[in-house]
Amino acid sequence: MYRNKHLYKIEQYIYFLTLVAIFIKFSTSFVNADIYKVSKIELSEPYELNFNKQAVIENAFSKGFIELVKKITISDEFYKIQNTNIKIIKSLVESFTIIDEKFIENKYFASFEVSFSKKLVQKYLEKKNVFLSIPIEKKIFTMPILVDLNKKETLLFSENFFYNNWNKNTEKFYLLEYILPNEDLDDVEIIKKNFDNIEDYDFKDIISKYDLKDYLIIIFFKYDKNLKILSKINLNSEKIIFNKLFNNIDLNNKKDLEEIIYVLKSNFENQWKKVNQINTSIKLPLTLQVDSKNYELIKKFENELSKLDLVSSFFIDNFNNEITTYKIIFNGTPDRFIQEINKGKINLNTSFKIWRVE
Image (cartoon, rainbow, N blue to C red):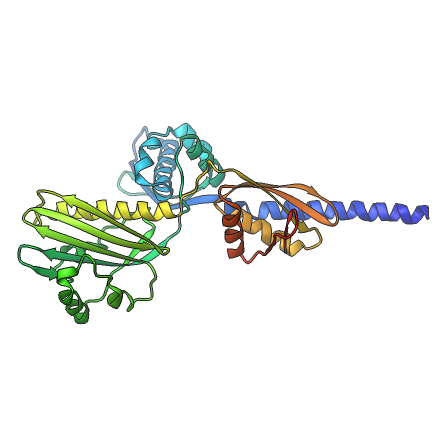
């Protein structure tokens, strides 16, 4: 009897050590899911007697941080963090790699890849009262239409500067990929037929030709030296309409027109980021339980938690040979958590007082 009890305790101890080892393995396996990676950071410096490679590396950190921040925050809030000092930026760096470096004619060229700690960056932005956005790339059907009110004509394709130049200049931090329509004569006829009510026309006949749910219709109304712009946006089934006016515009000045495209793209990027913005002021504590013997489910669950930007933190609060209990801090509502975790094909049984992962 004593021997059986003794063996049982040994078995429990071995099980405990095995479980700890598995948790350690799982916890370290997903570290890379918790980083923001910025690639292709290109730098060049004169190679002189006072050449300082450490300064070049720090420049790569600063440039990478700026690119990252522009990708995960709306442009209106950039001023709050644009002067972040290098000491703080270095504290946010998880790792970096010099992908390529060379010396050509007394000049040093290098390409860097910098990984920032996602959690540390989020905490820093929260401290600066900046809401970050989940950086999700999106393809969006985009139709720029130029309407000359003086001549009462519509320009769609080759004669339309905005159509021809919309995708010429792109920034690394852009999340939206603009898919322009083909030069279809049928589209020209559709627009001509709806010229008088073009502001109210829904463009479904044109949009339906493209396999994209999200769309952007931009109508440029030109009259004299003024440009009134009506934008109709559909992002994740959320419809947004806004107007913008540019006065004293020279339509023959390429630089001015490129600036208009840049301003509009910044606005559209901001609209998309707002759809995916994280309200870090919301701190929802959640308690979930998993079957301790289901190692694959534990691994999958931790993996999904690590990938969710809305998860501020999570840890194992308690475990035994039957149940493992997790504590999670989530930046959102319970319904949003269920929605996000279900995307990773994790099922939650909410009929229990403490939700079960199944």
